[in-house]
Image (cartoon, rainbow, N blue to C red; front, top):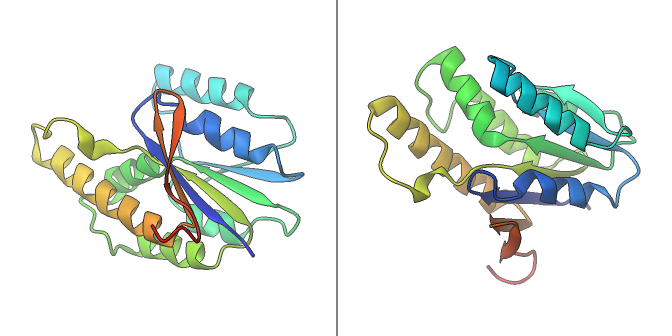
Length: 177
């Protein structure tokens, strides 16, 4: 039986570190990367993340199609880490324009998460806890990200909120939450 875990929280809260810790229990891990190296700072950030990952990880670049990346994983992969949902949604918005929560790429990801080929840990940002964004595009992004996070959390067996590096269990399979 496969398990889906959603790890959410603010920026620099320890989400990615927690996802990598979950990977320690698996022989074969795929890292599904959604970041795009669009500027110098992001290229450096991606390189730091790569350096933090164990060499045994299979890295799959999937800035637009994480569902397809999951479906195409080798059968011996025990865990896939998707890092991160919010960057993926940002990529989609930049490529396709305004998003809705039922666009084909989002539906495809939700479908594969209902019956994943392996355990999956998904990293996302909790973007709705701050001030209301000043422009329409940012508000639309916040709204879509919040709704997609909710839909993934419904599917997930476990949801963890990272607060200052401390994991707070929000949902555990079988606990009724």
